[in-house]
Image (cartoon, rainbow, N blue to C red; front, side, top):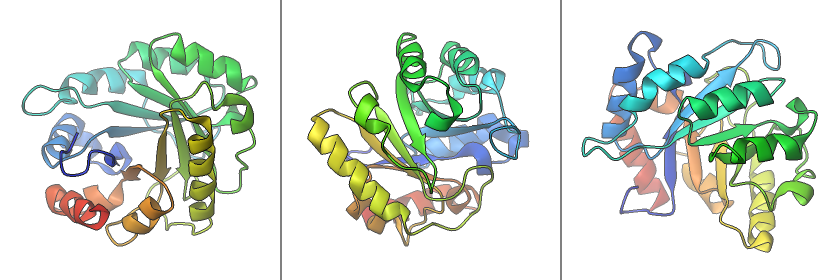
Length: 229
């Protein structure tokens, strides 16, 4: 974790990385200051795209560490339905956090428990038009809330401003619960809007094309840290 801003985490999404050089890309973005590696799983069923499965996660696990050998968490975001079997496979493949969409699971609470039973942190993901109501029944179980500020399915989209209200609402729910829950935002995050998202209550920021679309990953992450400071 970065000592300058211990409460904020930057989680580059390898959805925007060069797929032909994934191990190297993971290493480079960690060297540039990434706190987590965000791993977007799409099944061409729940969302209209197909990305990578547990084997890729397992292959990248040895690369997900700092130069000093400290493990960097792999943050798996499942945009898949059904959830449970693949969630178990990702837990076995070395995922540190696994989050899924409540509307993709027939039994949200059971899916959360199944992930936790593997010793992995569990999260719930909310699409732009989705209500947070399910948190009334699950917030005591989860470790992460992920607010989508774009519609899931592909990278490079623009930030949807109404997500800020949802982040504020989620922050209030987390504070009322008294639990240590990460509040992550994914979609259209850039150095020029990351502060606004943090001000709404987020502490963890997914950025794909904003980082991997630039030649110097460290320069972008440093810009984000400056904005957050």
